[in-house]
Length: 323
Image (cartoon, rainbow, N blue to C red):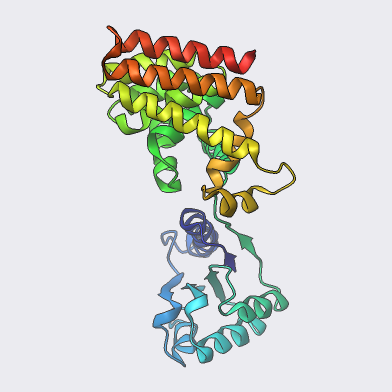
């Protein structure tokens, strides 16, 4: 049973089981000169589309023998009769049948999970990846699988540029791993997602808030070079500092999940802000806010050079953090 709602991880878990079944079938077929899937009969169905009695037909022995693999997806949507059939099948599994059941993990049809567990099913958990730290761990694991290494700056830049969808992130990791050499850092990521201008302002803000002056200035120059409006960058700086102030003013004893409802912020943003708060004081945040307000007026026409105004405010923000 594969439990969870993270689609990419669920799909990978299903493929791993199918690969194991394929290898087993191939071992039997090899002596006869067949291919790797010879002897394996695979059925991939949605639980919501299964009619009562159909499961027995899918798991019946093939005329040609061999393993019978049945993948039932979305078991939380199974009707009562089909859920009972799945539980009964798991309790008395025919030796030639491999049964794979996916379930979102919610309350719906939860009794089926209990029955599968009691029947001795192997459980693979695929929980949703929502926290900033969990996404960083996912990226780190993806690069490790590809035999590559990325630093924290590179992985944060990847999140800023690509977004939070795991499929997009996995594809981006594959691309970077195959097309680059050396450690994957922020500058490497920037070369590949140069057109994602909507993300660059937040990338500048994150690096400045974290006290990394060199990377913040590099991101700023890249953002301006690809046409990001200066006002979008001051807006991202203001939003980043405002989020820090909101999270910093909240009770430290509360969990991130509790703060999401209290502050109206997504969980990943709360987690990221808590990490970025290290090194910040209320006085430093107040001074940084004032500097951003001044820079915002300057880039809207009060300064001769918007680029210089942005470089200056980034320097001030870094100084405010480090004291």
